[in-house]
Length: 169
Image 1 (cartoon, rainbow, N blue to C red):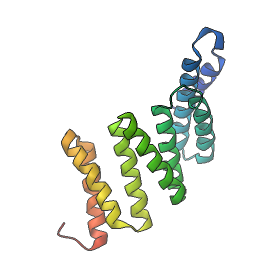
Image 2 (image 1 turned 180 degrees about the horizontal axis):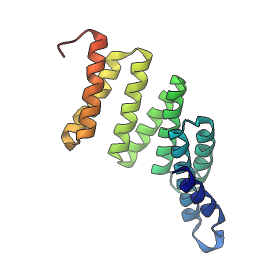
Image 3 (image 1 turned 90 degrees about the vertical axis):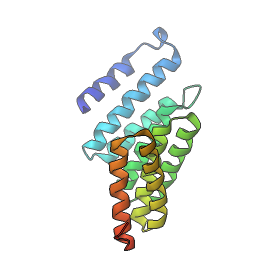
Image 4 (image 1 turned 120 degrees about the vertical axis):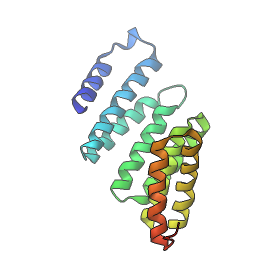
């Protein structure tokens, strides 16, 4: 995946600016850098992933409208910060990603960011707040009949209830 993403970055950087609309160039470059960051995250190479996300963000910010690409950059960066135990930075970006996704009508991306906020709250020891967020995402999963969301959030709610001493829940 990393080799493919690196190739996409090289190709997007080599595209002649005069041959494509400016917004297309920036969108393609942003996507390539974002995918490189995703591959680097999977490899645990967080510093390199953050650098790639900065490149992606630079490209997305040159678009006439900030769209889902930027929402994804914030989310991935928040995930990295969460892994690095930078919970304040992670929470701020997860909230920013959620708000922007909701504004753009990207409900599933909004729910991913809500889930990440719940994980951050859980890690901080704010279990009741984590329960509220996990329950909200579970409700969404049930409405969508999305078994992955249902399983993930049920599991997380179970862990929260164990932590709270609510074993019957």
